Image 1: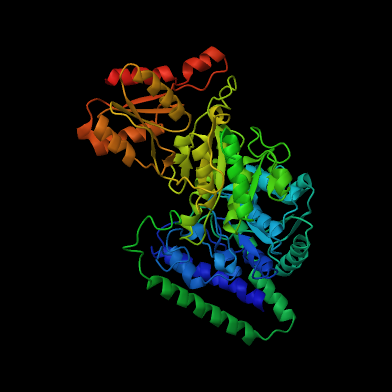
Image 2: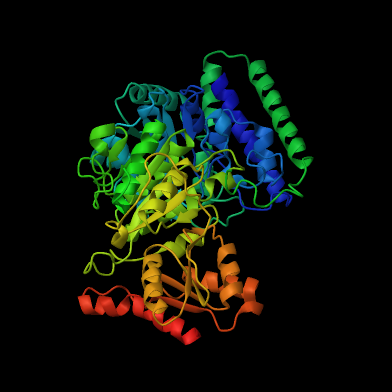
Length: 311
Length: 325
């Protein structure tokens, strides 16, 4: 039931954030994770607390799935002093080191190299943790994708590269940016496993994550896992989506990772009232997050130079 | 270690002492292992500390710097070598968007104790446009970075130790011409603090603000000008981010004249910043405009005489000083 609850936390968080943005309360862009929830949750459920993730610009889902506090992230989206980054980062830079999230990044694929560095620490200091680095299919066009996978493979680092192939890099259809049908095919260039799975099927994501996280933890090196999925929102919320049809979006919504898992649960004869309880609890959590964020103070009177350098 | 220690041996000595002091200090870069680095700065350290602390990397400047950042966030204190200043352009995202900003944009959750070191300048003639540049101004422009440029073996050792112990990303820029410069370097531990200028030579007539190899050039020019009864006061900035402008201002208050000298090309160089700071803080003391002496605004040409014509020289500095007197 954790899978279900964690996916729902992301969905409800994003719905609340979208509402706040529509009300003009989030002054800056947001990149919602709606539709991709099974990937963050499937992987993070396979991780220990000591493991790290490192996230992309579409990072809200990763933050919650790794155990980040929803109130502090919502406050961050509103730029409040109580935000997880004290209002300095906003939606694109949510980070929570204490829960093992090395942060979201506004530069596509930059997190892959930094994740490799975090994995290097684990290897050199024999700390036994694994790093999961999330990125999109668009990120696989970056030079850093090659550099990070190459160096991680050479050093057999404990890192899993998780490509969330949601088909569009902003507006560019992957068919116009990828010369191969699956990003995972690129793994062969580094001599590491590369597989493609259904990113909307949380059981498949979880099973794969367990296998390759264990493999990395026991010193057998990195893997590239491509999860096929679809983002329901535009690249950012409010984007005019001229590059795809409403019909295409509606078709994918029928393949909702949460709905699919509900079907699985009902087949398992899970009590509907249990599901309703979870929905109620998560709804309350997000109401609390919105209340906390809206009623938190602005970072007024705080030195603009704080945290630029450490003493 | 004491007398007759070269600049590069002084840096190597600081590396060895810091690696012995703190097991979290590691090094990574191209050919820094058995090969000892393109300029032999890390020579011998691979044998002493092993492949897990002196790590050869693929030719991937971006990955070198991002691995250093990721390792720093999680508890190591990496020293990353980039073979030439010019090659650090391949890691600009990692240095400018990542190392310099992650702590700030994450609200202080992490520290980035990384030293990024590379040589700059036209020390070995005939290396042309992509192996000879001095690009410190690019880094000095970025909030979140520190940029240091030692000018002799003594301050190279002390500044390197300060850089390794600093919890922030420090760009440590060595000069190729200085690598074989020898001087007295004390045994054992000492620090030359980052962000502190020094008076390299006292004088009364003209202040020369310089750093890196140009300090050496200014000291030579000062000896020559002494014979003409012109006395230079040479200020060695040592760091260009943060710039400790105080000693320059105090000197200008005394000499009322100022020349800024660097090997980087002139336009938008660190010299422009220093000239502006002198104008802001010592305008009323100036008897003449602040002059900049720098390399011409061209890529470094391969042909030796053309290279010589492009580069800033001692004669340029002497000419500038004479103009002010």
